[in-house]
Length: 269
Length: 297
Image (cartoon, rainbow over all chains, first blue to last red):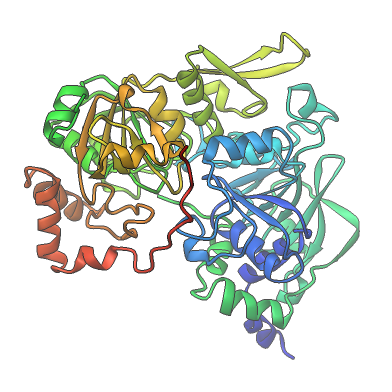
């Protein structure tokens, strides 16, 4: 198969969603942001994690699968509709093990910015703010992050910390400032590769080689000298069955694969 | 006490210039009709508290001094209403929290306490720019904890499926921060799809989101949440009628806000442009009924 044909089989957005779905473990309780994180969680539910529980930031608790276009809707298929306060109490009290969110910028230590590019008072660009993002990454035992990668988005230091990662990377800092112990970002999935955290610092774990991405390309789109995991590998490409489920069942209008690729998260107006 | 009045009366009586206004509805049951009336009466210098609420109209008309929120469009390069506010020097200050932060601030208001502690917002830059989030020492187990100052809105507006004439209001479906926000508000305007007999309320009292004695005004307003959805009543029209380009926004204001006397006229006008059956098409097609709860002696 030539490279061109391979690229046509699936997109970087689909790779992001499938790789993110692989991070969900069966029986996880997942605090999931609207959009791309939700599609990935749903795909996991259709494949290897049928018993995961999805909790959306606007306050919906679901055990069942649901159509994406009704993902924030509540006419049917919710197990509990307690509102925003309650689901965040669940998270703060430690009952939600997995968080899942998108990011505008991320830095070396996994701090996330979804607030402002540039100076807070004289911004180059304004995003919509935290939403549930700060809550997810502050409280969940581990958090999966999806983001489109570029030098402007992968920074040594983010312009504004909306949602804290490992701050300046010193050990125990999250606990020191009062965040719950054993929480924080665990994996970052971009359109080029997958990163985990080694001693609280992002480390490249796999490259989307099947899409033709190279190590040089990955490095070129990181704003610091990225740590490379010793066991660096190729990202596991989506299977035909995963692609079929994603395209035909989970995201039939193919909105979210495109959105994943363009930004890694959903920006609502 | 019967608190039923017209929308015009309710808004002019209970929403004042300079108020902190709580807007209920997190992409569900937005009090759209009430927001339109506030714009029509040009009640200004508002501080708006909301999560995921549609405040574009208020901001675009320069009526908002401050947005107290966890998530709101602020990029004026892509939104004419925001540009218009900027041009009038009426672009609001954004006081930012997370979703939980807003619900905690309103909970503290609802509980009648000055602040509420949380393990969130720590390590974030939000407290640097929001004077209502402080980091304090925990008096019991030591260590740091964030303190979120209470928000007590002067007036809260909520749209519900049913309420009685006294204001006992019942809402179901996605609640966002409705429970906390409306109960934190000093004055409350309830708009309802339908005013029902009190007996209906009393047969399912767990569903009452705020009791009548806490409510100032009750307005019967069918389609009051349009273009948002309302569980069990109608679906949303995500496109809606308003556009956020210059021509679209100005036309909307002229025709659908200032060009009508009230929301019932608005509904008729939308039918004229979108078709007589437009609203019927938004009605839910397959209503699902829950098992009745049983009470009694």
